[in-house]
Image (cartoon, rainbow, N blue to C red; front, side, top):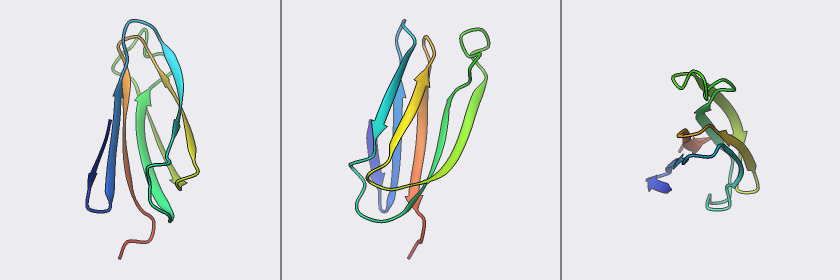
Length: 85
């Protein structure tokens, strides 16, 4: 799910009973440079579901973000302009 508030984007996804990996395309972003902050399941989330991995990186509308989700896991992401007005 993607929600927009002004120039900020909020993205989230939930997983079911099978772990999976996705490639999230950021084609929904307008042209420009952005800063992404992602919280996703850690490698041991199947054993310790409270563990999260935090990733910060520069992105644009051509970026593809690899996301691994544990059983019953998910992710949240906040994307803001890199050069705010």
